[in-house]
Amino acid sequence: FRQRQRLQQIAARFGGPKPHWLLGHLPEFPADDIPGIFERMVQLHEEYGQDLFNWGLLNDHMVIVSSPENVEKVVMAKQTQKSMIYEFIEPWLGRGLLISAGEKWFHRRKIITPTFHFKILEGFASVFNREVSVLVDRLSPYADSGQEFDIYEPISLYALDSICETSMGVSINAQHNPSNQYVRDVKRMSELILLRIFHLLGSFPRTFWTLMPNAWEQRKLIQRLHDFTDSVIHSRRQQLLAAPEQRKDPTDEDSLNSKKRHTFLDLLLNVTVDGRPLSDADIREEVDTFMFEGHDTTTSGIAFTFYQLAKHPDIQEKLYQEIVDVLGADFRTVPLSYGTLQSFPYLDMVVKESLRLLPPVSNIGRRLVEDIEMNGVTVPAGTDISIPIFVIHRNPAVYPEPERFVPERFSEENTQRRGPYDYMPFSIGSRNCIGQRYALMEIKITVVRMLAHYRILPGSAMCQMRLKTDLVLRPDKGIPIKLVLRQ
Ligand code: HEM
Image 1 (cartoon, rainbow, N blue to C red):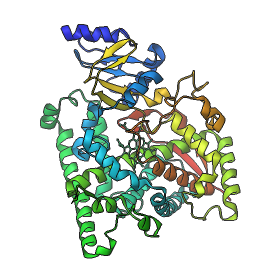
Image 2: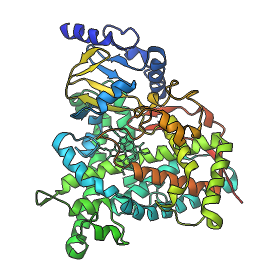
Image 3: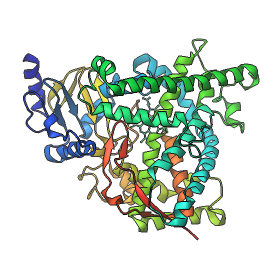
Image 4: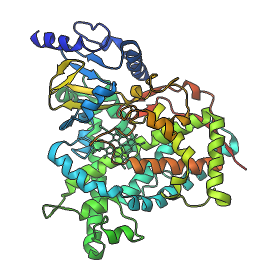
């Protein structure tokens, strides 16, 4: 009762509907409609303002902030921890970079940051060029037949092939072999995590892991996923032992200047911390984190950009013209590089606007490590905070007519008018996305290559697309489009 009173004093400074005494705001959300839960959450901000207090069962609660002053306080806090929802992916990813905190996170981030040196990314461009050609070929029957199809699925196989190759140096051929066990397991894990988030017992780990069939299935999948990563790590370790000349730090000057492509795994295998190499378990949690963070996010980023281009044929044509103008006569085949992509200002604006309206990571969560003052009241350490990036990006005071797709919002002049916390698809501060440049390169190469070959048209149900989100924002029932071969 006393805790309830204290919480009520905090809640009074935030927006939100009147809670049920026992169930809090749970009755606000439709129980059997996952996209409906996301839609209601967004609507609550329209009705009750930027910062909300969300009650769960009894005293369970969460503070949701989207006002720039409070977002800044949370993302710039000196010490940070992730909120409860991240625990749902921990059995798979371990305490890798996404979830870890404190000293461990700091050391790992320092080791891993050089892997995203632009010269290393340049080496990855050849993987994207090759894999996107496979994608373009695989989609040609749809252009020939004019048949409508869901673009999300083929993009996700393409993104999986790309991340496996760039992070582990392994080709799993998901595009040619979608029934590959690893591919099926990664996809099923994402589904099971989503189901757990919306299950009433999901937040009670002991009950969940003992009683729920979802948990029994997860255990099996996680074992297989770990076995796969372990076997890749083991065989690459053996290769490096057998060929010591390859055991060079991929981020030193010589390696960066050599033509050889380095994977993220090579870096982790060669690094030492206090003179000791990382263990296989340490490496596995980082590789698995990259597999998770590096394919679902980019899949949504690419697929949502196609969705916008299908809806806006004039913008699509303008972008096509830029592609032809910049790349010249060989625009369909010339290899794209990190460097080339810097010459596409309109593409840059289109991608940024797409990440504004449909940010692949639509929410991030933190657990406060220290008390923070917000809206004139102290929010105590231990409170879970959610930052709805999706809502921040639709603030009408910053983005007039926020629902409209207007790439020019990201001209240099317009960008300068906005504050740092008005646009954050990759988050901000020390825990921002380490893969940001990788992601943008992959999205841009895919868009350029696809548009060079095809005109993208909306499928019949495309405009009714609804969204759902676990840790990644996705279309509830795919993105139906049609393709027309460009002559
Ligand atoms: C469009 C694609 C992507 C988007 C929108 C995105 C967005 C984000 C966001 C918002 C965060 C902060 C998460 C949080 O605070 O909990 C994050 C973190 C992270 N992202 Fe990405 N991401 C993308 C692609 C990638 C890729 C391709 C990789 C790896 C190759 C990657 C690796 C990571 C990692 C490891 C973290 C944790 C960083 C840390 O805490 O130090 N992301 N990402």
